[in-house]
View 1 (tube, rainbow, N blue to C red):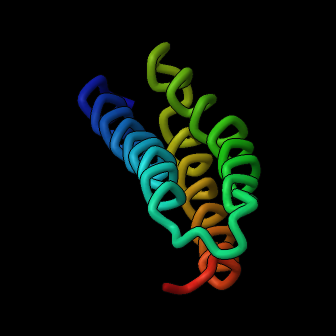
View 2 (cartoon, helix red, strand yellow):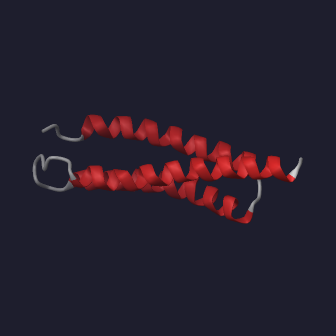
Amino acid sequence: MTVSTSANFRKIAAFVAAAGTLFWLYTFYFIAHVPPGDGTGFQWLAVFPLGMIFVLFFAPAWLLVAIGRLPRFTIVVGLCGLIAFAIIWAQLLNEFPKS
């Protein structure tokens, strides 16, 4: 594998990891603006499964991008994390109170 091919996969892996990280940060903004519902603040419990997805998929992806190892595997891990985010987020949107 040439250096330029490896660098391209590394850039794609960084892009996927950045997309997951930005979505994870956006969830905090979204949850903060959810209508109060019953006033208990239980909507903040959604942070835990989303945080676990970030820690399990995107923190290792960032580490692998930083050290330049296994770029193709890193892309797969990041894409699996994005799929996990999509599944969990779709479920959470049904649970949040509507305005």
